[in-house]
Length: 227
Ligand SMILES: *[C@@H]1O[C@H](CO)[C@@H](O)[C@H](O)[C@H]1NC(C)=O
Picture 1: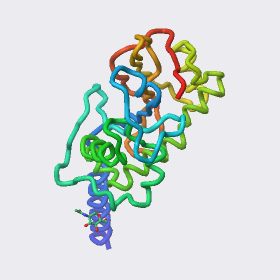
Picture 2: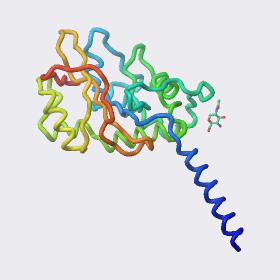
Picture 3: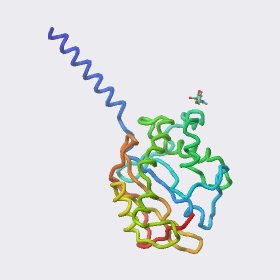
């Protein structure tokens, strides 16, 4: 009786260790990055709309990036796991809409998704397979409606200038977490709202406070260009 009991205990212990191995992470959190299309397009470099047409005036997904707490990040983690379009065929039309490529030449965005999967997605394969990875990003975009958050606070993409603090505050108010804002410069030299970073736990589903912010800074007043 006693030995039977301890053998069950042992099995439980082994199971627990296995499950720990299964959820062991080789990264600490994700950055979920969305970009404002007008700010991609109005720089000196310009842009090309995808073959599906001009994207809606909304933030688009740039990526879901595994990161370390020290600020560094892993990349290109699994050359044996190439992007496979047929694994995400059910997500493609949603992705065309929410994750459009603005790179030139004009494309169907597959090259963009391939790059994101191979550089970043392969580094979270311990948690998310390819389908799960893209689905997680799409779900996060639904959870974090940045344009709505900004508009609720009276911050519109109208080519006017807004304070960085008001932009961060509007997102914190609506989504509950402090974002990091990346700026770039339009072809007239104005600093503008380019990308918004939120942090996500290693499951890829819950937004969290950022353990560390990227480097770089905007000015205190930035333009929100219309698209
Ligand atoms: C791509 O994914 C499909 C569906 O899961 C699978 O049948 C096919 O073998 C994969 N192709 C490659 C090259 O791995």
